[in-house]
Structures are given as structure tokens and as C-alpha cells.
Image (cartoon, rainbow, N blue to C red; front, side):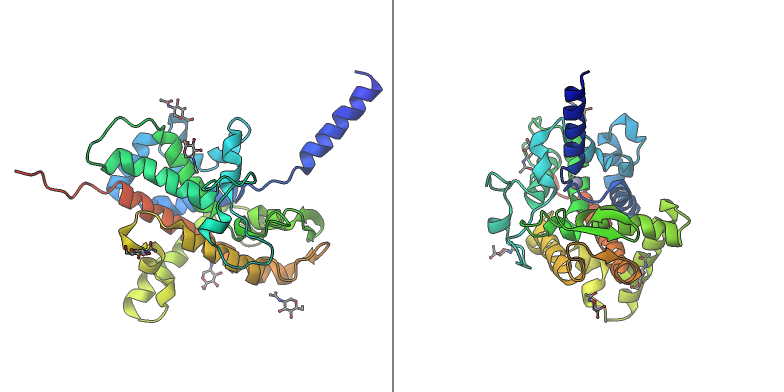
Amino acid sequence: MGVCELFWAGITIVLLLLIPKTLGWDVEGHYATCKIAEEFLSKDATAAMKQLLPESAKGELAAVCSWPDDIRRELPWSRELHFADTPDFMCNYEYCRDCHDSAGDKDRCVTGAIYNYTMQLDAAYNQDNKVVTKYNLTEALMFLAHFLGDVHQPLHMGFLGDLGGNRITVQWYDTNANLHKVWDRSIIRSAMETFYASDLAAMIESIKRNITLYIIYLPRFTHWLQSDDRLFWEHCPNNSIACPNPYASESISLACKYAYPNATQGSNLRDDYFFSRLPIVEKRLAQGGVRLAAILNRIFAPQTKVAQA
Ligand SMILES: *[C@@H]1O[C@H](CO)[C@@H](O)[C@H](O)[C@H]1NC(C)=O
Ligand SMILES: *[C@@H]1O[C@H](CO)[C@@H](O)[C@H](O)[C@H]1NC(C)=O
Ligand SMILES: *[C@@H]1O[C@H](CO)[C@@H](O)[C@H](O)[C@H]1NC(C)=O
Ligand SMILES: *[C@@H]1O[C@H](CO)[C@@H](O)[C@H](O)[C@H]1NC(C)=O
Ligand SMILES: *[C@@H]1O[C@H](CO)[C@@H](O)[C@H](O)[C@H]1NC(C)=O
Ligand SMILES: [Zn+2]
């Protein structure tokens, strides 16, 4: 290779490194969401889920929840299904306005994808005239589980102008990062290091304990915390199986309230930002897990219809 080729190879590598990643929670966040979901799956859903999982998962949903990130190069059409940014400084989410890809094609965003893969699984498991589905249901399950995580990452509903925080370069303690990455991974990794001796399983256990205490037991005995009990988290209006739009609304509203403030271009984010934002991240992982389980429990519920005599 001549000097010139070397130079261009170098430039290419640098450019590849600079390509913004809008991929959602990093491996840890997706693993946590799915591990939490596994805890709340019904027996029927667990059985159906295990049947669909690829062998490599060894029966563990969490093992394949980052699969859509791993294959984004092979399946370029899936790239824009991980997020749904809003016009700059708009702190609400509107499906019609916001759910499209960069070419403007409707439904091609994270909430559109959640409807899509829910519909594929529902059609295969619950429709009357079961036809052999043309969809790969293993992939549908892995996409659905992944996108339920992504829709809960506040900056997956960030602003279009800064690519959900990807263009806002910041320092996370003493390392360079961008705001999107801080929410995808840095907060989670710093929490693991600071509080859990870098043990993700311990962090997940602690989030699960919180769900059991604050989201399941306390609301049962008290009547406060209405918006923070499990039934409220799981509820979808009109008996629909999945309702991702409210989750996207919550995300953009959290992005406006917690992700963007005090994190401008060049900010150095340290303890103040970390300690005040960590509870938001933990709650979003919890909600993603509980809601993913609720959706799968609805999809895989045994048919209640009695055969007509
Ligand atoms: C729906 O799923 C199919 C199969 O994976 C895919 O080809 C299509 O692009 C998806 N559309 C959306 C909006 O998710
Ligand atoms: C379904 O998708 C999985 C994961 O991509 C793949 O391993 C499997 O071969 C596919 N099944 C069919 C029948 O195409
Ligand atoms: C548990 O819940 C408390 C109270 O809401 C919160 O402050 C804390 O950050 C949560 N911890 C985890 C690990 O979710
Ligand atoms: C629920 O159904 C009613 C009546 O069909 C409809 O007006 C309403 O928009 C639906 N709500 C949602 C959130 O889809
Ligand atoms: C932003 O920083 C200021 C000054 O340190 C602080 O008073 C304020 O509470 C911070 N706002 C948020 C949302 O963190
Ligand atoms: Zn993603």
C-alpha cells in the first residue's frame, strides 16, 4: 500500500469512527431491559418465547436483545427503526409528525416498528384463520424486545437537529463522549462501576427489587403513587396489545427535562449530572422491562375463545 492509499485508509477509518451512532441503549441497557422482562413473563409467554429464540440464546431472551444492533450493517433498512426524533425543541411526540425515516417514509421509526413486530407475532398466534406467516417470528421477537428498550431511552426521542444528542460533544468525567452516548451507555457503566463493582447482574437485581417494592407491593397497600404502579405501566388503552406512543412521549419529555438541560456543547458532565440522571435511567430500564413482558404476555396468552359447539 502506498502512502496515498494509507492516508485514505486512515481517513476512512476516522470517518467511520465519526459516524453518529443512534442505536439505543448499549449492550448493558438492552440486556437489563430484557432480563427484567424475563422476570415478569407468564408461563405461557416464557414457553412461547423459548420456542422462538435462536439456539444461540440458550433460552435467554436477554442474550439476543442487542441482535438488531449487531445486524444493522447487513440490514440497512432497519437502521432508522431504532429511534424517532422530534423537530427541534418540540417536547412532545406525535406519531404522524415524527414517525418517519430520513427520506420521509411513514411508519419507519421505533414506534412504527413496535406496532409492526407486535402485529406479526399477534397475527401468527392469535388470528382466527391462521395462515403460515411470511414473517420470520424469531426476528420479530428479537426486534420487538430491542425496540421496547430503545423507545425508553429518552434521547431516542431527541431533536432532529442534533441527532438525538449525537452532535452534542461533551466530556463524561475525563473522557470524550457525546450526549447520546452518555445516555446509551456512560450513565449505566458509571453506575455499575460506582455502585455494583462493575457487575451488571447486581445492578439488574437492584432494579428488580425496586420494581417489586415500589411498583408492585406499595401501590397494592396504599393508594398513592397512581402513575407509578405496575398496572398503570402495563396498561394500554382500548385493549390494544402494544401502545408505544405514550412511551415515546415520556421519552422526549424526559429528554427535555433531564437529558438536554446543563449538557450543552462542550459541557463537562460529572457527579451533579450523573447522580441526578441515574434514577431516570434506572426507571426507564424498569419500565421497558415491565412493558415488554406485558406485551409478550398479551401476545402469547392462551386463546380464551371456546370452540363453537
Ligand atoms: C416490518 O417488518 C418487516 C420484516 O422484518 C420489515 O421488512 C419492514 O421494514 C418492517 N417495517 C417497519 C415499519 O418496521
Ligand atoms: C429467522 O431468522 C433467524 C435470525 O436471523 C435465522 O437464523 C433463521 O434462519 C431465520 N429462519 C428462517 C426460516 O428463515
Ligand atoms: C430505587 O428507587 C428509589 C426510589 O424511587 C430510587 O431513588 C433509586 O434510584 C432506585 N434504584 C434503582 C436501582 O432502581
Ligand atoms: C380508543 O377507541 C376509541 C373509540 O374507538 C377512539 O376514539 C380512541 O381514539 C381510541 N384511543 C386510542 C388511544 O387509540
Ligand atoms: C443546571 O445547573 C444549575 C447550576 O448548577 C442548577 O442550579 C440546576 O438545577 C441544573 N438543572 C438541572 C436540570 O440539572
Ligand atoms: Zn437500538
